[in-house]
Length: 241
Image (cartoon, rainbow, N blue to C red; front, side, top):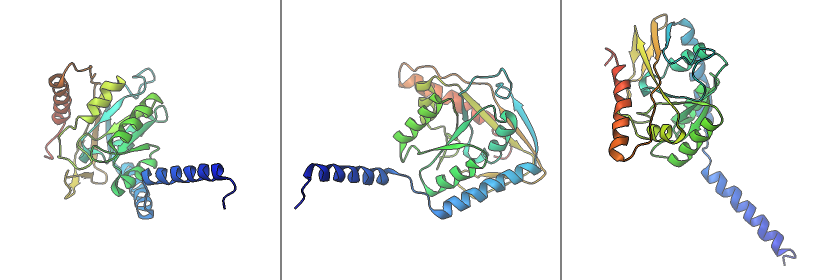
């Protein structure tokens, strides 16, 4: 016989709460943790061999430049050199989070970005979308820049998903388009044609002028803003296509 039913029921409730919390956690496999860390260091070592030309059109690298936070938007296949370029430009003066999917691939990306000092918000339009939105809003409130690949994590390539526009609109945060041009590179056989620059080659990274997202009066106005930002990013796609 249970002599303390109220206490027991309270313990049961706490146990159920912890179990429910665990069900919503994103579990990272040991393989993803190790592989992601190795990928991050590979990216960092490759960056040391590259000849970077970094163009700061928005002023994020200047002492009196744009105040944090901002949202960086770049195509998924251009991501490889951007963490290193951003760190070279901003040093330790800014802090940033990156949006990654809730999958094992996303776990690897999160671990790779940790090598560069980035934090991660986990989720995508197809999984944990609400959690991702809440996480990015909180990061912006906490003064973090946010880095997003608006055609990721699964494409279609060069199609700007509307979620990023919604975040910028809700948080009144400017979007910085990021363009990357390669002098010599390999293209992987992936959905996005992911590009990896060849060692000792030239890489031109442009942090473009900020784009302001205004509150949209209706769906047509919102779509016009999405297309406007998409067009700016598409204009930065070079002969690799």
